[in-house]
Image (cartoon, rainbow, N blue to C red):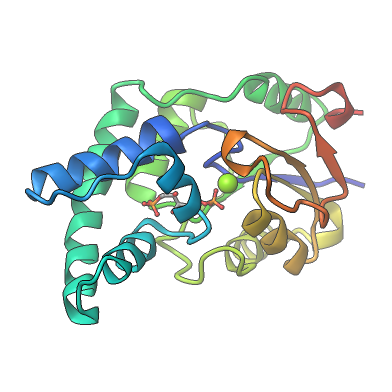
Amino acid sequence: RLDAVIFDVDGTLVDSERDGHRVAFNAAFEAAELSDRWDIATYGRLLKITGGAKRLAFWFESTGRSPGEAAELAERLHKRKTQIMRRLVEDGQVQARAGAHQLIDEIEASGVPVHVATTGTRAWVEPLLEHAFGNRFHTVITGTEVPDLKPSPAAYLEVLRRTGCPPEHAVAVEDSANGVQAAVAAGLRCVAAHNPYTRDDDLSGATLVAGGLDDPALVA
Ligand code: XBP
Ligand code: MG
């Protein structure tokens, strides 16, 4: 029996990292007159650290800033990055991944509600879900509500708590090793589909690894 499908956002519903978040981080560096820049490969490695503010703090420390300076810069830059990301989303720069709309259509047609559990910040997640998906999600939990980011199961557990759905009646949809770990730790079955950035991620905790959201195996 299936009572809920809970979607991850970054890399799952939208291919947002390379041309969305990465671009926003670089624009925030530029606005702050810092010479730091993240190319595609560097950003791919940094994605192992979930949460934009933590990713920034890690970067500033690993490039020789003191812990205090790294923390201050990370907080300030992440605020700016969030504003820029919100603008990119509102300008329509971040679009649904191939097959996302159709998959949601089929789930809803079978009478099962869809929800969101993400590690991203609410200030850009909300406008994204509105612009790219027309607000089709019932319960939306973001990294703003649950400070323990994936691979912690906190976001998934909070969706289950608010919906009253037991974990064995829900399925998560993910794209990354951190995401699959979070879903499995919450007691959920998980279906996963790699994207270019998570090509080498270990998704073996997933019940099914699909070729993409448009893989017919997903709705079977
Ligand atoms: C996504 C993240 C987020 C985004 C950036 O992981 O880790 O931090 O990269 O968004 P997942 P913020 O797909 O597992 O949720 O800057 O808002 O954190
Ligand atoms: Mg993801």
